[in-house]
Length: 565
Image (cartoon, rainbow, N blue to C red):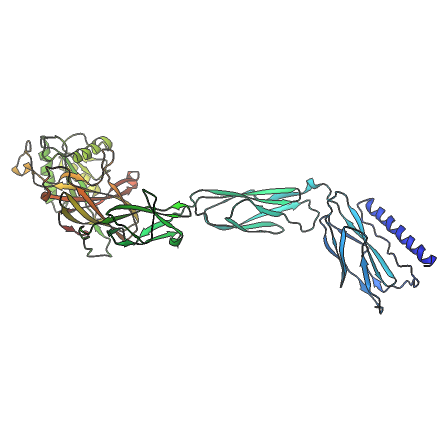
């Protein structure tokens, strides 16, 4: 080894230390000396050319490259690159000289070197890496911190700004708190986007999406409303004989979800099969459970083989029903003024202008000595007297369930109220078949609706030709009383006589029920009886209370079809 060679090596080491000191002494970049090899051939002309002398990198580190060129290749000579710096690694020679810089976790900047040689040509390149500095300057600002969403699934975009980051093109990391209904989270240089599933639950739900970068953090609160949709359960039939089967289907938001549901009895919550078969006669209420939520109720009447067949519908596609209101005459045999009402009602029944627009029931509730008196009649009269408060004495004629006026025996008042409620058509009709079976009446009823609606119904048993002396009667026929209320299928109270639930009926649909009404009064002559069927629906005019929609009357062991206009 010659003295000339040792001297050049010492000069090189001294120069590197001097350069490092200059770099670390301030923030400004300095240009290091390009150190040649000082070998035997110390020509000023170099085959290896590198224009960069200092490479500045961020504190985050990463992969970097040095561009070089060789003007004249020398046979047997290879380009070599290495580093004495431990935080610089993976130095490799290819079309470029590539290397990797580790993350600088210190606040201060640091300097390293890469040595490059091609034969006698040598370069030392400085690598100046920034420190993290004051991390309090790193901030994430959001365009919004709270996202309020409807129950319907959607895509969401929230803008953000990241400041104070040393790394060029830095982006925060997104972390979602436990919520599988927020998906496909993507963060780019300006925004975070994500998809939200439809909320099938009846409860509101919320979660948080956290963005973080080093010491900075921001949170997006995601709140989704409860579902306004409800799973809708329907049955292939709502009336069937023992041993027959019924099939259920469930629709949610226009989609058939039957296979994702279970069907349950309402009162026991017991799961039933689909299709289902019932071994006992009775009324069954069922619901579907979808995604933990209950559907609407569906009622199914299961009846014995002895039940009468349903009335035949002569016009299945017809929904233009004749309308018949409900009139109730509140009377008694000891009432001296009641014969006047009997005369007025006889006039109405014989009038072609009015007789086609009503059905009448007579509540003998004035005196218990009246042979036509019944507790059901007394309850009904008490409703109009104590709850509706439109009845103050006898006789009184009431109209439907909720009409706020009544009439005495003055014909002009009767017609005035009648004309207020008279309609040419109704949105639903009812057809009935009956059978006297020992001490009970079996009723097969069909409700046909033009519109989708929730209905109630009741069936009153009326008796004709009851002899009971009528005080102050002007004609002999007044001692024989017709349409007297004897029994009620629904459990009526003086606070509510609107009946029991029929259930929800879809528009342009016919549903069926079979019910049994036992006789509880031994005085009743069964063969003189008939049934009055009343259907009711909520009416906005009366604060959504149930009001009469239509009525029909059917004799025993007879069939009464739908009445169309």
